[in-house]
Image 1 (tube, rainbow, N blue to C red):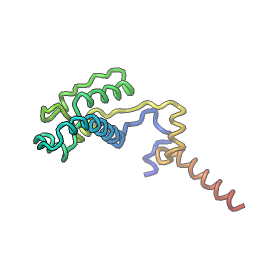
Image 2: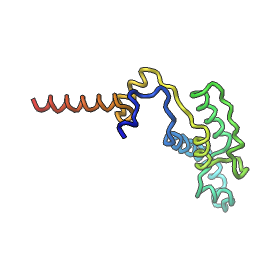
Image 3: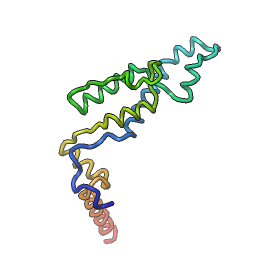
Image 4: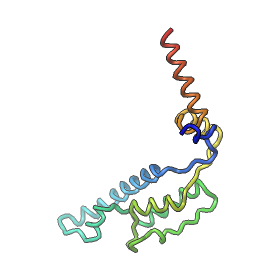
Length: 149
């Protein structure tokens, strides 16, 4: 496992699925806050079948999905073209977590790190590279020596 690590933190880092999960959860929160007004107006009425399905598989509007994906594309690429209709499986104008995972897998976004960012990642996450692991061990030894004296 140690041999599989690069010596330095690579210039390009893949965007992890965990980040996409955080984005999806945030979009859900915003969407739920916006629909509170609608829910207050329809209080006591039977929810439509599509709204009942959404409770099992939370969905966000396609427009919100496109907006956030274009913003992410602008951050990591020069060409922010994104075909949002491809991810609307049920033609309902919404996407769920499955579609977010599909977009992440197909897109495989990568972020270019500057030298200060690479140094920060080296010190913050020693498992990313061999230099980070070495620095972590040296700091641990320095702490043990300073406490022992």
